[in-house]
Length: 147
Image (cartoon, rainbow, N blue to C red; front, side):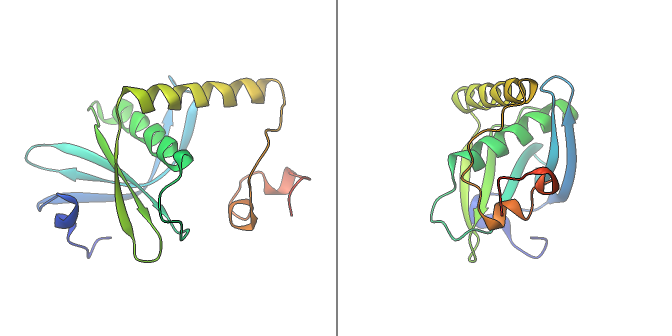
């Protein structure tokens, strides 16, 4: 990422690139590690990004919700409004801009609330998990349903 010219996604130098950002939100009751964000200098804007290595032609809805959650945590941390983020997919790193509008924000908050409710009720949700997802999961040692 640091060697790439970001002009093809509409961002020109100067900009700062931050990677592997640990985030948390007391308000949303979530935490995670965002792959990174880009900070432009003039005008000052922030663009979170998530890198997905799967060869799928389009980013999944869950990837967009994850990006939105990171954007909302960044907003809380930076005190700035974030309108757009990027999902980078596949071997050739195709870039998909994601508009972080009210609809996706409401869907993200709804998803977070459902997850919190399921955790409170000790419900294990159905999963489309596969070996790639399971190998990266923090609950792998506790999950008897996978692999």
